[in-house]
Image 1 (cartoon, rainbow, N blue to C red):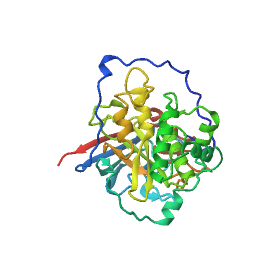
Image 2 (image 1 turned 45 degrees about the vertical axis):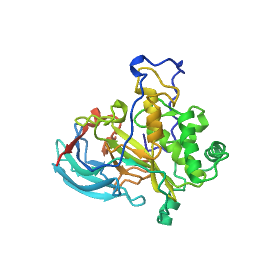
Image 3 (image 1 turned 90 degrees about the horizontal axis):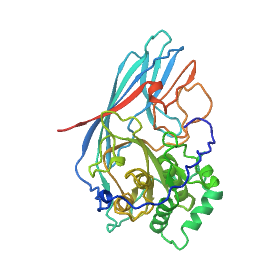
Image 4 (image 1 turned 30 degrees about the vertical axis):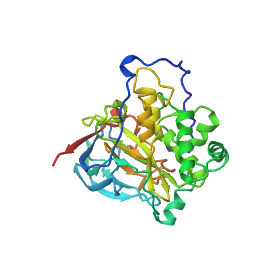
Length: 367
């Protein structure tokens, strides 16, 4: 991910032939998150800047969601920063810790700990009601962003995918399954992807990672009148259901960033979605690439991630096109899911934690 406005996604790898799963993976798997009690996590991001050139600035995302499935309890930090304070993006409102080190600080270091509670999400589709939401918020989640247009090829694709669908629920289900059926996880995509859905569709190669694939779903939904949003965050613990690709190693969350999505349905409110994780399981959970969503490994995930999430994940924010406070260079950030930094030599590469010198770890607090 960079600050440029248009990225072409990397070309997909050569198509692999479909193979029969080994017997060890043939049995039905279980993936059924149910709404249960709260879990408490401390998520710690530690930054050690090795190459000091002038003043150093950091922007670290913090949990910024408070709803029925996540509670942000507070943030604390230590280190030798010249100044550090919580700030918000001026237009999107996403919160972050902004840190400055003067040029005299020889070895800038900072540790940010965020305490947050999470729990599973699982919608009971039989329980309908009427949910009211701020009209301005719904309007914002129908609008185009710089990398999520809602006209042209995006709208044309969505209209074709939703032919015969009349209600918002029917449209969302059709688009969710369209993404699962037509896109795939491209393992060579850097980071979580750029989220440039027009480039994705125009290329004819629908391979990417979560910030591409869930953004595609969100853009398609918006283009046919269903409010939708990306939710940027990080996996903080293993999956309780044994899916290795749906969890994170709490001691070292390198590469554990994950974007999810939500849609607003009048009878249910904001509903959890994650077609990107269905495609991740199909591509990486077993030694062979699963090509059929009805496969016994993929089917439970495909079913449950339409309306549910597992609570081993912490959400940072839902913002697009951010303007980082006090950032010295022009342009906006497509989304804030990784630590950001800069000094006199330029912008740090957030997708290279070993050279940027940051680590993220989580610890579950058991009452």
